[in-house]
Image 1 (tube, helix red, strand yellow):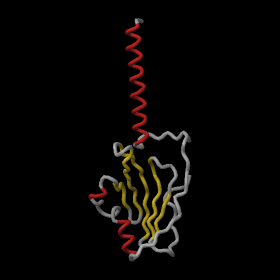
Image 2 (cartoon, rainbow, N blue to C red):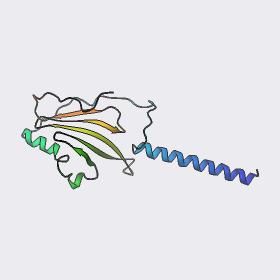
Image 3 (cartoon, helix red, strand yellow):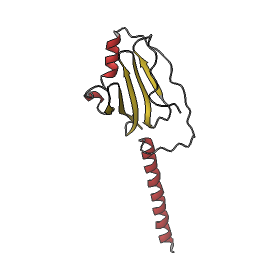
Image 4 (cartoon, rainbow, N blue to C red):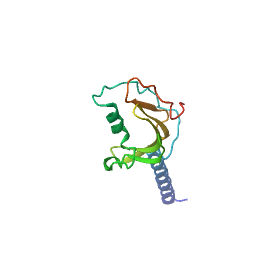
Length: 151
């Protein structure tokens, strides 16, 4: 093999490796490829925390539930898509812009409604590996069962 041929082969191999690395990075960031190596990840609790809202309980519940019920508002169309609706539970994709808005990552979540007391959601698929949250509209309400099992 001549020097020119070796240089071309080396450049082609380097180019292919960079392409595969770039593709793997893109697929991982957008949530299309998940590889849990356990490196650099920590799990932190999200709460609990509370916020007092000076509005009727039904109004607060409606504001939280509107993007999920019926047709998704135009302002939320690029951030939310409901995949399946039931009477009090649904499955929805949430889209988040990452890397300065150049890429979009997708998280699929279950959302449970207990009008007017609770809105609970939990991770189903995507970049987040352990996540649960719930929102209470009334302070005396008991939390609903978790929509997803804890890992």
